[in-house]
Length: 490
Image (cartoon, rainbow, N blue to C red; front, side, top):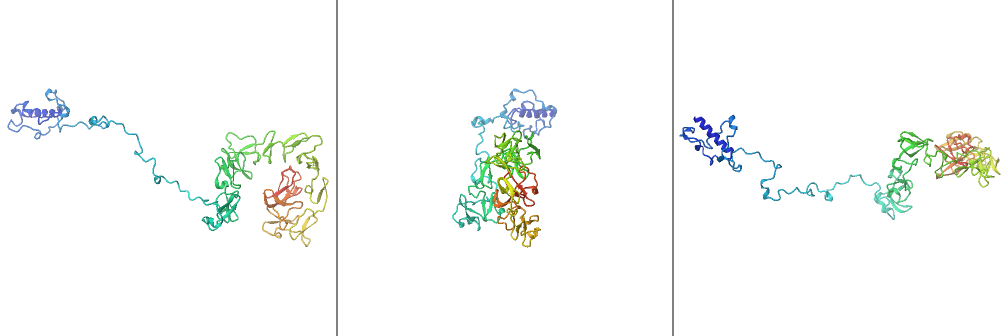
């Protein structure tokens, strides 16, 4: 009985705590049981808050008894040692004290400069650009009056007189000593075009390219235009080797235009080389005029059909009494040249139109002194159209008999010549084939080259030895139309 009374008292105490009753000031257990039913038979001190140990949990202890009206207390008065409710999640609901703080429900502030990295850091905090090294042309073309003004570029720097004024340029011994676009001329790195306002110095607009030789800006090259790299070509084109040059070409894509073949992914002219017309002359005007860069019906090497003449690139019927407008219209082998003033075909216009040993007289070739158009190197003289030495032997019979490493011997004529087909204007060590003249190079007046002439000006495949006026052995005759050509080494 005592054991049961003790257990009931403990249960009441626990329930009172669970209901929020303070065991020190709430319902007295003695009000619910007699003293004799208390543990210890009433002589022992009744169980208190501090003396009574927590009982072992019993299965039926988890069930709350019927609530008693006088035991219900507000949750706010819960005993300190009662099992606390779980801590509220700060994100679940508002702070109970929020009503006391009007700012508690204010929205988060918009991100500002003080939230995260400063979007406008101080200049000394900004990232420095990558170090690409000093400008190799820094100080070039600075205005100057005399050489000492340019010593910042080195002891060999010069105050150079250029086409657009004076400017400082560094010294050099060869082109490799100079930056790209500069050339070592007169021991100084000179910008292309020999001007300080050259595009090598000041650059070009984005849609143009710089011609580093002339120093002038130019439009990017179109199809078949000359180039050195892709940047020289118009958008969509690439720079590729074509024959002996590099030209801008279109990609094959879905196919190539007429007159082009797909080679290595690029549309290459079927002729194997690019011409000034872009390599696309086909149909009724299949020929490119190299001088006008226009597609035409006729030009040098491509005459009109029999019975018509070539008038400004178009084949037409000749007016009465007109035989020719140019040599293209003279197809008779005996009269291959046109006297344009008279519009008549003739055998020759001057001595250069005749074979060696002949001269032009009244439009016809006549016999003449065979040595009239022969030049011999120093130490040799012409006899019967060939060069001989004082002993009457050929002027040379082997290369070793000609001075200089690049001098060769033509034993058929006894002449010494240069392998690159250039000649000495005074005929000292390198001379031209009999019948040929030594003239300035049309493409480089600082050099001299030999003239030549094919028997058929329209036959570009005619061998050198069959030319009416050949080049020295190993040379190639570059001739357009019936005007004399010149010799080159290719």
